[in-house]
Image: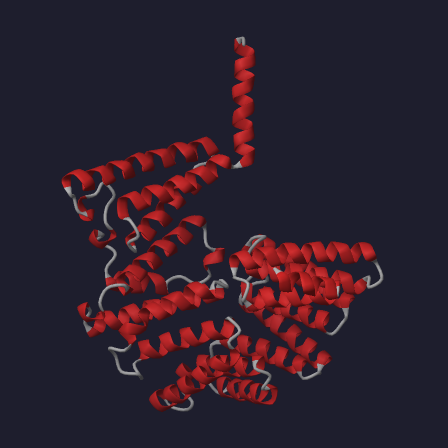
Length: 434
């Protein structure tokens, strides 16, 4: 082989490698192995894994990712050899131990996690920071509860509640649930009416609601609402967030008159506040719109959604997640009412915006893709080609939802129901066998 052929072969191999992303996959595997060599299965390994996976993301080339991962792997092997031969402890390892990080105190973790909001809209570096802080929080929650004083306990519980809310808003309810469960032993050390404990209880109840456990969520939120009313007073704004979730849980549990009455009562209370939380009030209006639709008042719900979308666009911006949520819910409402044309007109721009803001495979984007596909099938009910295209799209979406959310998640169940409805008995049998 002469020199030009050799160069052509090398360049072709590099091009194939860049396109196939094999080196990126291999680099991720090597990083995971290297972290296990240095830290085993300890909680601190999660911090290192998130950090060094983020380091990989900053490499522009596939070959660079692989070289960086090989460097981490060599370091991990050396750490493992040192421990085996010299019985070195982890704090003396080549990779710094998060316990020794001076900035990662309990107070710093609490303040950092309260400073995050929508992690899906953050730059990659900030998402990495959130993952590192959350991993540090999880490590602290793994310590015996007795090692923390009351102030540190309250700070950790506040941080856990804040992280739960962020993960729920990002549609990662299982991570939120695991954090709430990890914080439960700490919550038992404070009074049941302590504000930090109440925040954590609300976060846990919210996870149950979002995971489709509606009756359990109603029970938890009712108890919490009574406790907050006793602690803060009947008209205190500190009780409004739980009241909103309770009404939403009642609507999901088909207690529609109770849900509507709860939303309207809460909206009246907020209207009397001199400095009302406008985003929270718009949340109430949005959920009330859906409750109105579920009771058969389609046009009233559509006008209500228009007001919410207008208000959120003005207050938060047209591309904010809450604005897009309201637009999606309006389109979904038209799908469920059988009006494919109106649903398609609403959902098509929403999909473009959600893909841009959240990413193509985010759970929110998958939901809009699903209902846009169903809307297309409704507009052409007698087209076999459209039906096959819709079924292919729904199967892809269900596969991604099963991978991301789990087979028992409400979104996955909903996709299965649409597949079963559009495909008929054959699809039902295939899914029940799988």
